[in-house]
Image (cartoon, rainbow, N blue to C red; front, side):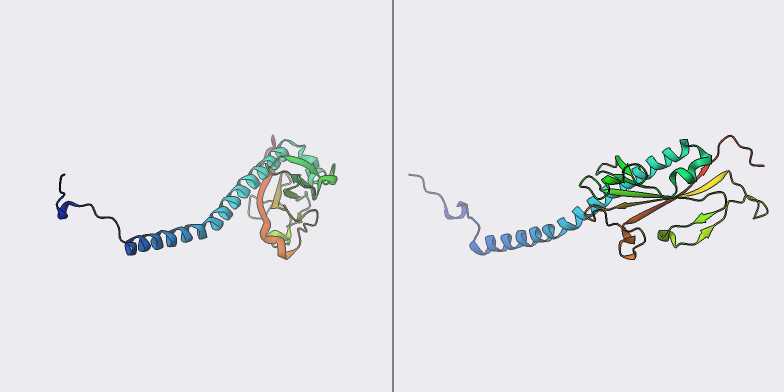
Length: 187
């Protein structure tokens, strides 16, 4: 029989050491669990921002290839409905029946100033504007029209989304741009 000297015996953790280690691990775990909802909200908001930017670009592309002289008639005040991936599922002029359905996640509204001017949407403070000038107001041009595209995540609100309601204004992302009549001389 071999005798192991007392100083070389392996020693385990005491109950106090194990309890302290578990308390430290529990505090760290609770802290991480508290950050989870905030991280999920941030991820959802980032996804919404990306899809809304895609919707804006899709509408802008459509406006740029449309007939310039009929933009105000064809698109002014139009509301377009999109699914969760930003794919168009209908609009207020052709197929308003999809508004408020399960697939309707995002809405976009288009505001276009005609040659005589137009009204700025309430999400930009309201007001009106006339036209563009390149020489300090001496002359104006009707070859450029200001366009405002408002996009909102309306999931869960059904068909009751009111663009003018102050309580939902924080849901609206506004994109401002201009559409130019191509092939014209600006002198």
